[in-house]
Length: 306
Ligand code: CP
Ligand code: NVA
Image (cartoon, rainbow, N blue to C red; front, side):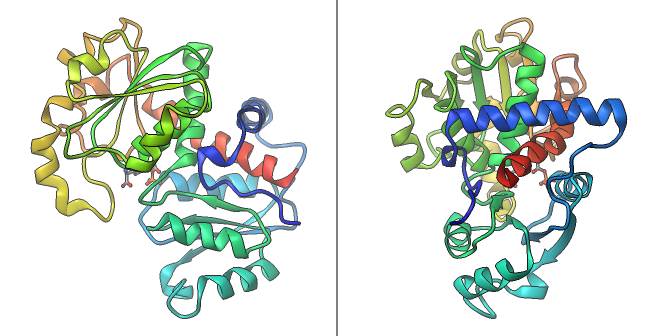
């Protein structure tokens, strides 16, 4: 019987997510105190890191984290294996399972990684698809807990494009008790299926606000992401027009709770979805958030190795 995968925030129960976050917290403390880890759960294992899109944070934090947990990381681009082109995903999954201890994959279609996970008998981790980015969310939740002391009961505004980050935030709101406001235009809405399920499951609440001030009023966290994602850069100008009221700037920030934190998964297009002034302000936690990619993903891999 195959161990679990991590393809979306809804793959795991709240208890499993909390457990992975506790492991992440412990590993972060241990690394800061000793520079290493006592136990190496990935010892003797090679993780294949398949990337079909650019990445700074995800690739480098995964590879570093795998080494720190005693494993070996192998970076694989589409040029080597041509996943789904040179042979079927079903065949590639079964062959890769004979060599590797796990797969981290960043690609376009969520269905491709679902198929890969179905046919592989090793853990598969979603390192971003067009639909979802759950590893980012684990680091985000870890950061919010560090800064605010809790996640349940918080008001969070996600502003901007209804992309993979927005979709993952909607799934996350229901894993904890989050009051999530998605501030976006009618033309940049998140995935309709994910949204339809949002308020039916779990204790969180998701609302759509087409007015930026309404979305951020009194919130504890403001979150944003680029207005045109990888693979959709042709939407850059049109989305800039559609989303201009949702730019995270000082004027908008004044409507949030005075202690509100500002988050961005990065990379940022400074001056577009967020201003320099906000990114460099005391409200911004973006670099702690980026650091936590390393710790949160190690929590995920340790849980998968249990
Ligand atoms: N936030 C994030 O996933 O960054 P990269 O695209 O650089 O990996
Ligand atoms: N929405 C962005 C996230 C990058 C981390 C993208 O998919 O390009």
